[in-house]
Image 1 (tube, rainbow, N blue to C red):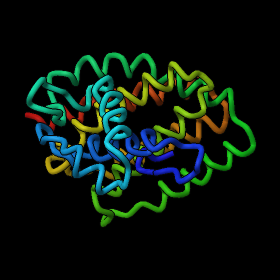
Image 2 (cartoon, one colour):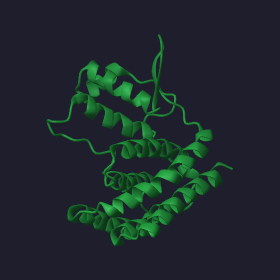
Image 3 (cartoon, rainbow, N blue to C red):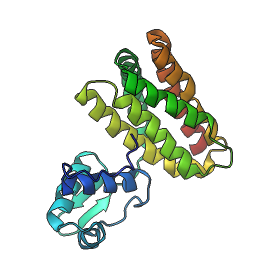
Image 4 (tube, rainbow, N blue to C red):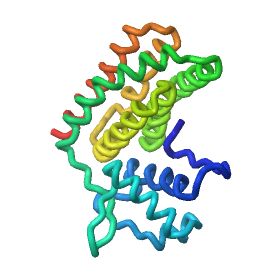
Length: 220
């Protein structure tokens, strides 16, 4: 599932809706690092009260996406490129676990979702905008995470992926072949469908290493 998706179901609270919208804007850098968060403006734009906005911001602060200062207000957190090493270190351990669990937990409905995602990845074009490619990258990871049947693992991976995506978005102009990185998911998703646990783990770990390598090259 893409983190850009907003759910209109009445079961979803206003605070949850505000959280999902703001989180996506923050990780895609639509709200730039260091920008102030205007509660009143967001309340008017999203047509919700100030309380849901504040509840959402508290969650986003625990996600390290915003930071609050007494008497100054709330701001989008800065993107610290030094965090890349620690984020990649954790993801290289956890992403293979998630991919393996996804392979073990496949249902008929989830299998169709993986097949549709593979088809979408194959249909990507060199002319696709970087923003669209990054949205697709998020969707792939969210699909895998939502298949692990472990809410604690899913929550941790989503948080790490959000932070990694912010770094990714920051250096996109310096990455000459973004589409190749996005298409690398195809082998991983096919291995999940085939239930090849060792191959799944290897693909997931390699994907994280290539992500780290690509970013470091772009930052030189």
